[in-house]
Image (cartoon, rainbow, N blue to C red; front, side, top):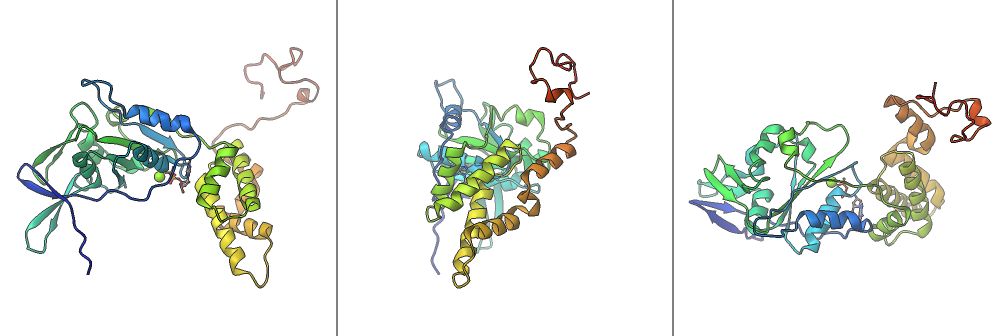
Length: 320
Ligand SMILES: Nc1ncnc2c1ncn2[C@@H]1O[C@H](COP(=O)(O)OP(=O)(O)O)[C@@H](O)[C@H]1O
Ligand SMILES: [Mg+2]
């Protein structure tokens, strides 16, 4: 069997086996400003200065993880990703003991601690899922102290000067409310918005260079319409729709399936039948959020909204 060599390092009296960095990263396409803002957070301007650990916030599939990975690549630093879950324990985040072949206890450094020791970038992915106890163990790391304390290994681990961190968070209903004292250390907040039409096309083309332009175009049309309606369908959904449609097309070579039919089938399988009628979905979603739908009065047929003669113009609530 091939032996994978594990890098080890010593902290105090304890030898830690390090996690390996993540290889094979994707490019970040479009939204240059957002990438610049993230890179700005990681600049250190003076000996007395500290890097910031920002929160990357947005709906699932919009590109948060990809952005953080691309920023690490731009800085040419090794990248480590820690996937946060609701049952992540402080020791999972820091150092875990494992029984070695020799029968002795060996200590494994998490991707976070490995990034701290190696001077890499750590992305704490989907941080909104993690419980308070685990976040509490990171409080000293995320302020001027820049260290963590592993109770299990009995050591204090200081972060390398090049260590950088970012946290991604979905803005849907998360498992836990991250406490304020943690949020105040995860600043600033960078909201990732939906890509423009042109960028969305470039993203799909980049990931699916073998797809026909027509299929990409109807997918981009669909996604852009969904973004306008405030529905949270994402580039990831678009990539999945095109991928499945292409596979169905390839399979039905003998009984050709039209590209339109394959696309419609794929849309339904990936996002559900509801997604076939975006307007209705948007209306239903607004209603469930308790927002009143913009309604039209009889007056609206005769007056433009900003017409000074509009009888409802100065009403506090134009919907009444
Ligand atoms: N600007 C972008 N450039 C390149 N790929 C993108 C971009 N935005 C989204 N993607 C692609 O969309 C998919 C979802 O992105 P991901 O970063 O996993 O989303 P999130 O972390 O927000 O859930 C990935 O395949 C990713 O590569
Ligand atoms: Mg992600």
